[in-house]
Image 1 (cartoon, rainbow, N blue to C red):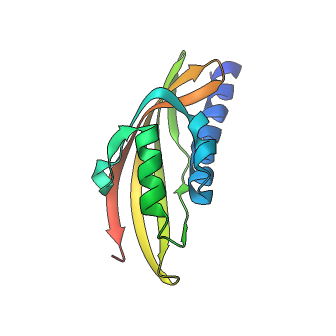
Image 2: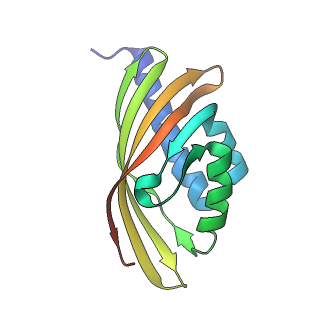
Image 3: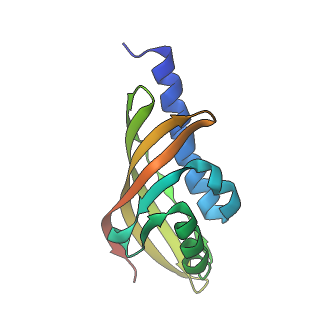
Length: 137
């Protein structure tokens, strides 16, 4: 049986994953700072992006996502395993992006996350993208 604490943890982690996609699609870069641990590493090399810290990704994302007229990081329900103050999650993501006001480019991927409980809630400690496909290039 799942404890009340684990249910709470799972809901908080789901919310963290959802907030990531909402803030990314709104380009709310500064609000995203609170989602990551200070030593978080994000490895998005499988989709052609960079591996680095959140500040490095923030600068990179601001540059490469600006030309897109819109994006949607549509997340499926994550599979979450909580182990005390750490957790792992795997979440499917479908990401259509608008190029030149009308052309759509699609990315299908998974996020593999390592998470930690902090004094201010669950945070990403490591986030890795695993590419499934590109379409519409």
